[in-house]
Length: 596
Image 1 (cartoon, rainbow, N blue to C red):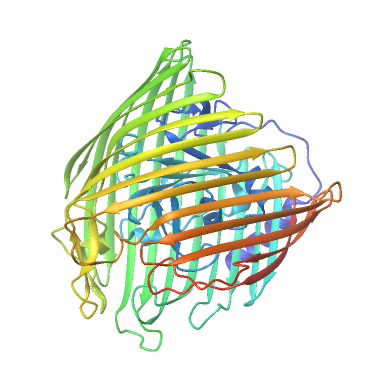
Image 2 (cartoon, rainbow, N blue to C red; image 1 turned 135 degrees about the horizontal axis):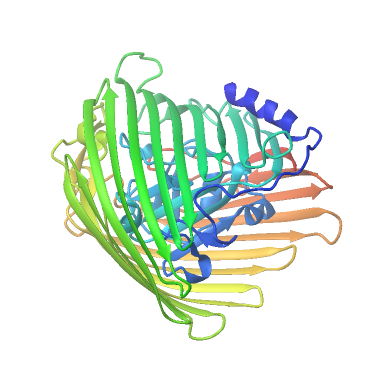
């Protein structure tokens, strides 16, 4: 594969003799500190001042736990449900706080990757784990900051910057083989990052084989001007993914952006242009080429401009506007086009030395779905050292995808009369941090209208897309983390109640959620031996009656620059499904090396 060749080339370059050290200049968006949050607000804000519910998963934490999949990393966050159709990032639907799979926004370095053709592609992350700096997950309505799709929340994957060289290789059961690498500095300018990745497996059952790979190039052309280009391809057996058929799917994604940032005193200005091209080739039955075989090509372009002012007292105001377009060319959906524009503003006001108020509003206009106004207000207060109280309320919306509007196959049909979803959400939280402990409790509610689902009266007819009226979601998130110098223990519990009283039909997505989720992870060293043991347990009690615990374990030995490991996923060999009708793999052993 092209991804394998790129990754091998990078591995050779990354560990070549070091050249003269260069000074690293941070790439856009600007980061005011290592703890800066760029997802919850328009103006980058330190995590300690964030008034929204934010979970930050750092590269250091993920490496300590032996996490090898981006989706497995996201599972660690409270309130997040990863509904995978395959192992190791093959394909998955994401849900934050019980939202349906299209109701959360996925970003890479602040660039939208949600796909206008289908929300099932939103988990196709164009970045390997070795190139990740951190993952920021903001729960609750985010349309005031990001526009469409952020009803449940927003997930932002931040690319690693600064001098580094990392190589990861893995082999395992079911003919698994994977290679990924990332480098900045050494034979490259320290302001540029190059990464490549490739992975394949023959599959744990019939028609569940997969192969994926890609590469990225990101860096500063001149100070303040950042170029970013990524491309990836995926091929996978899709047995039962969208119905009772041995299907096959091929997807590809190209993403390019150019961003400019300028700081003059207290003023910060930014401009960014992005272009995304996504292809989806789907064959309903691998034995019947041409029958219900669809080819979709989606293009999306967007231009964003913002200007911010922050004074010495911490007061900040940001204004901005966007213009964009989405269009699809498809053998099944036809050719369709939607244009969109928006204007937005946000203020951050320190009320006292211990309190911060944040408020924002955004107006989005779509050529097809009309206008949506998205306000939000949030506040954070620290009554004493180590304590934080937070509260937020906001409105968000989502427009239908082209698949929901126009798709047709033997098991599903769209509906061109669909309207936009919209909803309010609110949460409140108490947090305590002391002596390495971080504890939090967050009750939340969301009230959605015109929620889109695929429904049917009986199992003998097609799923039909429809606005299924109102959905009310209530829940509670609890989390605890304890860090020592070389060990980490963390846990998160989520309780959910999703109520759709007017929905008397069979539901494909709205009522597919976990009522109770408990995720825990431990990473400890065995003395000074260089051996590290880590384990992650993920318990889910789903509405359909399933109860299962996924136990992953790893043992590793670290030398100066090399770590060798053996791990096992689903160690208890549980039989389970995260998406109805789609079997997931049992116990799976893997061995590998990381070099950095």
